[in-house]
Length: 234
Image (tube, rainbow, N blue to C red; front, side, top):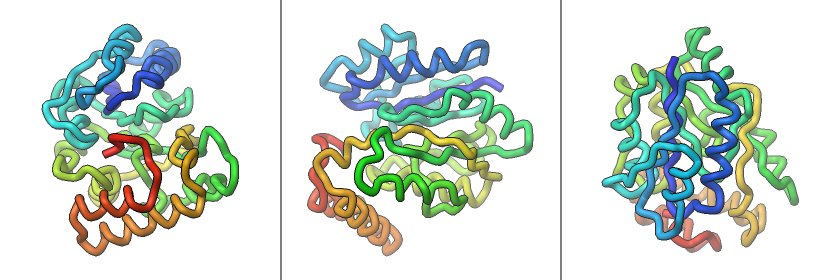
């Protein structure tokens, strides 16, 4: 197995170097590459990623979906592992993925817990232990074999929101999904300027809109209206 770790970024200079160093330490003797696919950041994201030892590129398509697809085209791995810049997978991620592949799984992800469990955030973490699609998301980190990727197709580049859920639904249906019983650490920065309840209501509204066939722009507008969220999140 060769692992291609793919990190889509936009203005993540604060996080990217620390994440890459963490991943490299965890990889040890594993055959792997780390590819940072950037959306033309306005800060030093790419500079810090290069200095940390990652392969870097500016994606021809901005948005997580297009950036991850572009990185896949530049990759050489047999397994892709998609990691968000503000998360930390378990230190054992490489072994976990290799073990899952050896047991016949061709895709999967982790549970998650927040880096700060103030308020009621532990409730979100608790429900990710259940292996249902509704509780899965891209911030839990997703692995998929190249063979399954070629079967289900890439991320949909016209999607700027819910692209991870759409991709998960396709690999869930066509692949053999492994929920690893460990947790990815997820940034709680969304909650810094929003209450727990406000975030949950916004998430539920957007998921409902997605299932009802709402347009990408309508979902983005609804999310922006519901939450105080960081600039250029979409």
